[in-house]
Length: 417
Image (cartoon, rainbow, N blue to C red; front, side, top):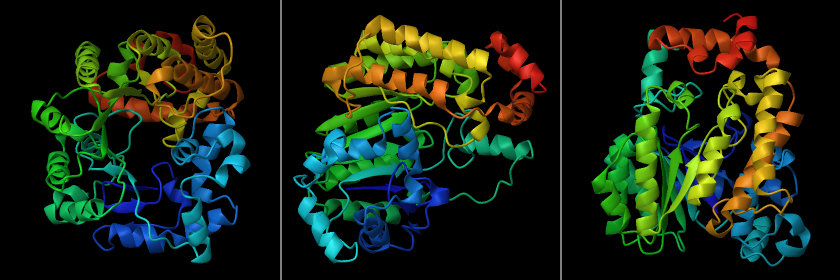
């Protein structure tokens, strides 16, 4: 059903897969997306059809371990497979016959992906402390100046209009094209986003296809909003870590007052146009204790949270790096939120974008972080790496984490801050 194209043009079989555990990749500059989907991905399908676990799927395995709704589960329900009743529902799923055909053809298929994550490029006006140089041009420039990386050559595939046309030609011939989600860098800064929206409209794909995109709440673009209104359904993901000023440190150089104002504008825009709005946060060692007000905002405004998977890299930014006292404090805050809104444990809703069940979606997400803080392997030994990294960033940005989180002083000082 699904594929991803990275900002470099590299195509991947899944938006959640771990690149360093996957050996199947190709670039749109060299291989057509339909060829990649049919032929290059055939060995992956063979592995799965044999009932074997594919190594690059480890992120979903970890998410499910702690009760977080995984990408695997989200994709299953789209075709009618019940994750809690897999064997009973698998045989009647909408792709069952195609799966049988694929099994007979060594993993090949005549289908095309109907669901895409499209990474437009790395152009970004933010330099989030937990981000990487591949996803943010601003962070890449900063890290190069600090001597932490070799700048190297970065080439975003959407810089080439011919590649955009090549990609949209595949979309135009895809039966039942369902969902396209765009991310950046910062999506609204990338010229390719506007070009691709127009290409989709020109190819008459806007009536049947849902468009999604993620923005960092620093840009408002009336022209983009007008183009989006042409589409049948629109889903907006807004990236924010906390409603407190620690968000300024994490999503530097944004200012929380301006971010809150932009958040309110997007909430209104979504309601006025019946768009689906979701909060996309990335809980880290510095934000996991500050998430409850964000959950409360979502309860009040009937907005779902779809927090990213448990952080893979950088490893030292994971909440599991916290010492036990701070970890327990964050856990207790989340538990109080859960007990305040839902003392009874309801069955998990695998559709994290179900607008009719927002509270259950929020509680399921919060409980997953409670489980993670309680059960994840202790990684406090990474604290010195964390301190070494943020000290270098702070020397460039002229800020201090203890101005935002004074309660972290003992923890950070003990690690060399």
